[in-house]
Length: 135
Image (cartoon, rainbow, N blue to C red; front, side, top):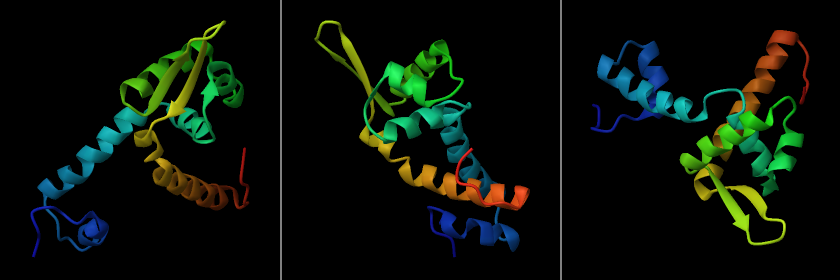
């Protein structure tokens, strides 16, 4: 029996055993595609990860993410702010200080990022035959 809301914890089992329909497939694809649309590109996740270690000014983020240009960082921060993942705070100081932080919604990606990290480590080990934590 299927409930009106699919239980995606069993989705892969159901697919492997031929117990799914096209509607269920679309219900799986759509939200994943939506998430990837928000997090697309090579810079958004590194920016989110950098901010997960605390609030930072633009120059601090730029230094922590090798090879990102200031123009690209600015664009990606605007996109992340528009999607309510990052908050931009302007302090009334001389000179004006701007600080970026993750929103509560942005922090909700923590589990996703940790799972991607685990998978990435496992994949690196499988492909290279070595275990490395960074590169």
